[in-house]
Image (cartoon, rainbow, N blue to C red; front, side):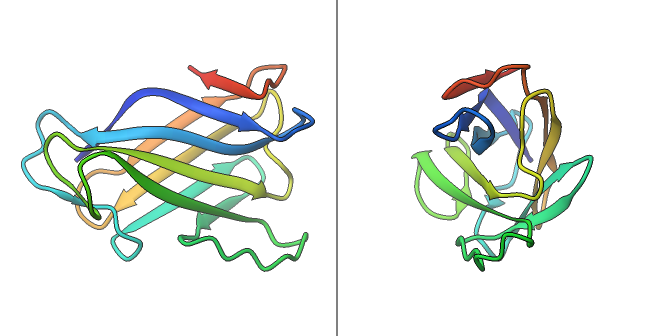
Length: 139
């Protein structure tokens, strides 16, 4: 089982009109007894808002069609290595949202679900503030 550690960070586009990426850190839960597989074959990351629900791709392979909503995700080990999250590891998950239809904009509520093939689903629910900045901490 994984748990959220620290803040959820949203990076806006250059015009500060929509969110391009959401980043958050995952670590094993204090009660976790087994390692968690965060490989591309062992994990599904889903983006949801009131208008869309999309399974994000890893690696990113957007088709370039503006009418097709798409997102991608990646994992970067801050502590530890590999695709398996062991005790003491810390992993930064980056979800790229540049191809949503509609885009993720101010005052919008969204959810990102990280679903490993074993263990509990990690759900990140947040609502964007009324004004976007280049980098925003979402509480």
